[in-house]
Image (cartoon, rainbow, N blue to C red; front, side, top):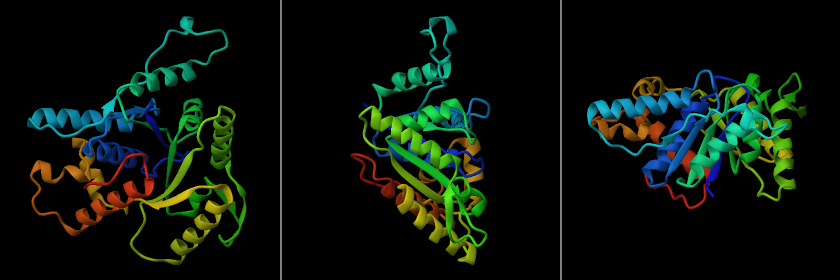
Length: 269
């Protein structure tokens, strides 16, 4: 069976689709077959990212490793068993359609709580939760006191992941490898940044996730989306002089892939 990677949290603007596209494309470039589903049925940012890539490569006559994208299948309600949820059935059908031909299935979840997102989390072998380096986003995982130093309790998203873990345990499946990725970080080592690091470290031990560093805030990511490109494609489209920011971003991606520790993946870029 394909290894299922779910990228999710319940807040928008944390860079989920950017992380999804870069992880999926990096795996493709390392020779792994990757299929993608986008569960944000309104915006479909990851779906549009991959479609943009296919359009750009076709127009330029280029061939670059590209993950497969599949729209969530539409199903006729009349074909479902009595009491079966149509969203559960659509997600099951989508994963099944990608499972046989891919080493990895990557599922990008919406920035809100939906039935699809909830079920997808229970399917995750690896769960990646990008998190902005802010206590506004940290509140997604846990509540803290007014000083931002003591954790007072888990929040709604952590409870959802806990429920997903319980479902997998009852089904006899392997535990979810949960990685919280500190994303879109600023360059300055401010007091808030230090408090965030300490709070995430405490929470990681308490509720059981690993931590990794994602991408700093960079203009390059906004420039890549319309053409469906990633940091690993720049040389292939003729960019000869990589600036310091681009090189640093590429290194961030390399370290992120290493930190994910996916099965049979050795970073080779």
